Length: 124
Image 1 (cartoon, rainbow, N blue to C red):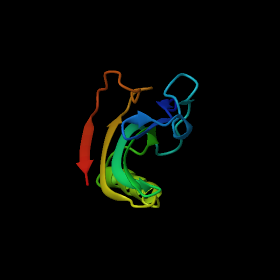
Image 2 (image 1 turned 45 degrees about the vertical axis):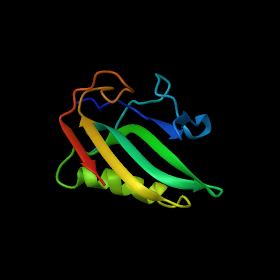
Image 3 (image 1 turned 90 degrees about the vertical axis):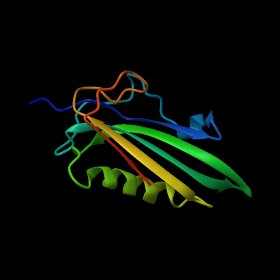
């Protein structure tokens, strides 16, 4: 079969404002044409947490789109764990929340388009 295609992009918001330098547009130029190996699902992950910028606390919201393994027990936790590890190094990191939506058709993890998800999980 042909490899799955997924969007590969990120929207990074600080206190509700999109930070362009930390974001990657979810458009046709940022599509992974061939998800590899056991990555047979597209995922949209949402992370939110607080971090400090200087001495000021900021609310961070990140929405990431990419290829991922199909959700079996632990896969969704793996996505959240990876997110926590990658953002957990930010100063003042706290109040971490995560959710992941998986889908298995080409480009099904588009930004705010209608998504048919076969699995949704919220973790803290």
